[in-house]
Image (cartoon, rainbow, N blue to C red; front, side, top):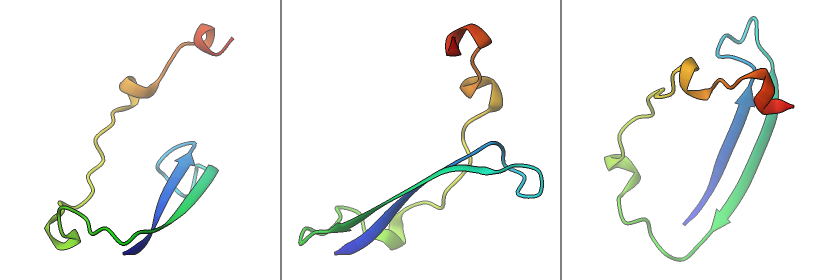
Length: 61
């Protein structure tokens, strides 16, 4: 099975106000099949809240 995994880092979720900071892609090509067929996977849901991912200025120093 061949697929691409994408990772997108952005400064926010509003495309009119925020920018893409980083984009990564990995192409996988494997003979093994997934344990769960793609049709059975739940749709993506935004799960993180702003307070969970914010640090303090000291954390970056």
